[in-house]
Image 1: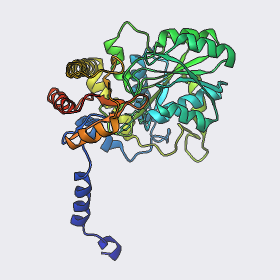
Image 2: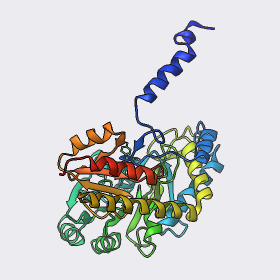
Image 3: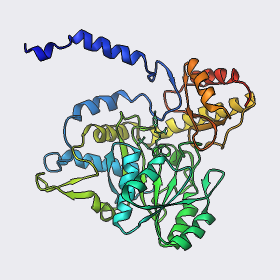
Image 4: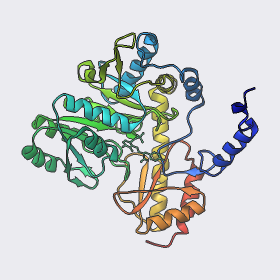
Length: 377
Ligand code: 0PR
């Protein structure tokens, strides 16, 4: 054996890794209720491992894999009103999906981004990276204001409007239908960020048109690594059709196909194939049942919070609850000492809880018990 392989014994390596793992919160063992991550499904983990080391970006050698990826993307799109002609790819997460979506808009001639303060920070980050002008639209009760958009659009001109289905900070849904109409009226297009809400809202509000049912919607973000139960990194970008998607096809002469798809280079086939498998396994029925359970627990948490005497910043429409609290930094520290790992709401003072699939009824009771110990705000 060469000496470099003996630098550290295998058991020492594993011991060191076990040690760092014991120092951080993990799903299942600890009550992680602030982040949008969860325990992946065993099937997704198995498929992820099977395909992890194949580069799906090589569309010639791995054409059958890309075919399943497109099928998965279309299935995600069908939840948000796509009639089957959608295209897209599985990204590394919502940030890459939003960046790719705004890049597509720019390539189609839209150089202004309309966003509201509830948009995820990846939207303004993408605007900065792409050199787009970012115009902030007002909100009413944490929902984008259609009249503010109408006013701004008439002075700043056409652009891409980013609406959110399931806001990161307070769990609201923008009025996608109304905003899409206003956007259309000022020759603009709409990108829907449904990173979290895409696998909840279509089942809870089936009467709403949250995606491609609106003719100005050109792209949607919906992340399998959030409520899709797929391991990180798996984001979803769904676009209206092949034509809108085409600027994401880049010439790459050394690839057998002569091109590659997406913003990055080598792309693991693990996430797209795990997404395909989970969509087949769970189906609309499975994800819809999950969504109803999560919303039920979200309702229980909101009721409990109110009965303690706290209030929520907004009535949640997806499983994200922002409990108003002035000294949120201190409160988070206290909750952490009780084994409850929450986040800050960010745009307002408060504690943010995300009711992901690993957050059981008893976990909700534990959170409420810890909240009861906090001094009134
Ligand atoms: N769009 C929305 C509406 C989001 O909530 C998020 C993520 C994104 C886009 C970006 O997605 P990626 O993080 O996959 O690129 N919001 C999560 C959150 O703020 C991100 C996160 C997840 C942060 C886990 C921390 C963490 O531990 O909760």
